[in-house]
Length: 222
Image 1: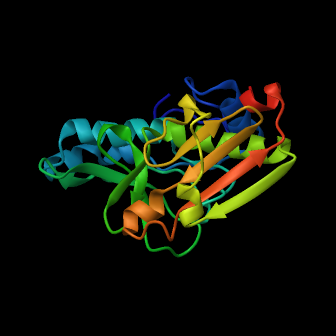
Image 2: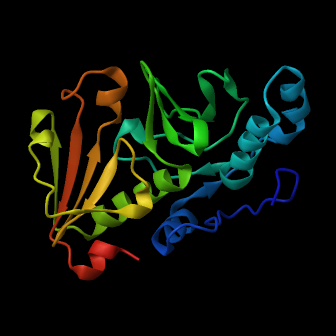
């Protein structure tokens, strides 16, 4: 489907997501009219933006544009609506584009960086997940874990660094870079490092959420 094609008013989980994430998108997402950024492609290229970067922004818009998802449990909820925009950057520093407006006034924005990584533009560019799919998988997992856990514990600051994750395995589908999820015997742990890394204020802005009391089915969550 391209930006010029009719778009279903109902959200549809894109191919490549886990069953859990597709269900999350379709049950809890809202599809709003998305901007047609494809019509800007030739103008962007005429102003020196590489054709490959223009296509990358268009491809993002085709896949995610106009999708509103429930707030994330960190980063003040994440983008309000996923929307692509004009790429910015250079060959030396790399190219990136906005991923959508913030829900509240914030000191950073959400961007899609080189190779499609999803991250925040704080004091410096900080990748959170290796792709937007990973961000959406993380949202879906947080929603599932919150509904399934017997208890949820928030840990902040230096205590996050003291967490023993040696008996946990990373949850691969979230494609964690700076942030990640970990799966243990009966719990899931989300570790949010993006603000601490982006602003260079670790460990003050570190935060982890521990979802405890999960059975085997809840640990996998679809």
